[in-house]
Image 1 (cartoon, rainbow over the protein chains, first blue to last red):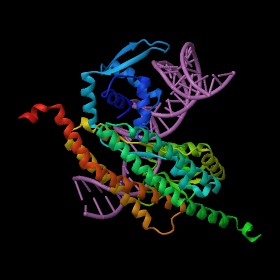
Image 2: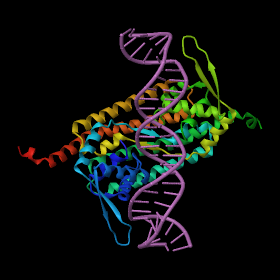
Image 3: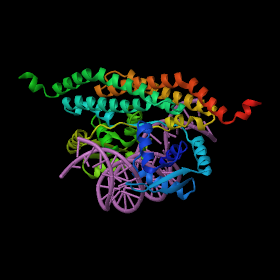
Length: 185
Length: 185
DNA sequence: ACCACCATGTAAACGGTTACATGATTAC
DNA sequence: GTAATCATGTAACCGTTTACATGGTGGT
């Protein structure tokens, strides 16, 4: 499953331009599937070439032209087939947790800053998601993924905040062990 | 941050072969940073080329030869610098949540199976992690990341199980809306 | 003045995944 | 016999990320 599939999926709920599709990625998918213009525009071009989406140029006043994409019946079939075939993976790639794993190799001050930074980032994500939540009439799928994000991010935030002090104490103790000269002063 | 950095990191706690490094990835990093032989072996070759690790061939009885890698002082410096430079990202790519988002396009039976499959996968991950946990004398970083995984996976599992019934009901209702002919029979 | 937003794209670089290739040992 | 474990690697493919390229509008 790649950006092409997600673009098709977004178009099932209405015609949109590449720019608008990017917005949907940011608002609805940002916490579990990221994509930038560099993958969205080529994906739409390829989908158009395969006849899975149609494309109409729309002139606008005081704005650049838009290319509005619409899913075709063939596109809808391809999407459903793709979703049916996809096996559900769930992969995290976290430089944050790598840094925590090697916390003893970092200055303790930085470890604290990294934790606080991550907490703030998660808060921002939650705030963005909450804005979606305020809109009425969410699809069942969106409600499910929003709830997932709220549950998991809240748990993650609570965990790292609760462990911050202990981790800092431990790595400071390790640092003191390695330079006992200072302790003797 | 890439596989090279993680390999250097693994070697700070002892000399290892590529095969053994892969084991560490599976046991300690699997839930936040995956890597296969296809990225580990080339990473080690490149690190050796740069003089950041040393490599010794070890003959074994009744086993193929091993290439044991050891981090060099230059490697240690490079690692610390890299960790200092790395900004803490945390990205999820989840086909599972994509499927949930588009649940209304799937047969309800499959949605249930996908949720149960994911729950089972998370349970397996937790079991693997618990085995680590049993070992005494964990580094602070490992303890932190293990606790993180336990907290977050438990929250995720509880959430999807609690929502399963509701989601299925909702998408069945939607399917009935689209084919009212059946309801009239 | 400057920044954010609207709007679309390309090209190279980078890195990871997957499949292929080989082969012995040990346990069921 | 069959599968898992030990052990190392390569090469093609795939897809994302990043930087580049352009340019008007609207608000502070």
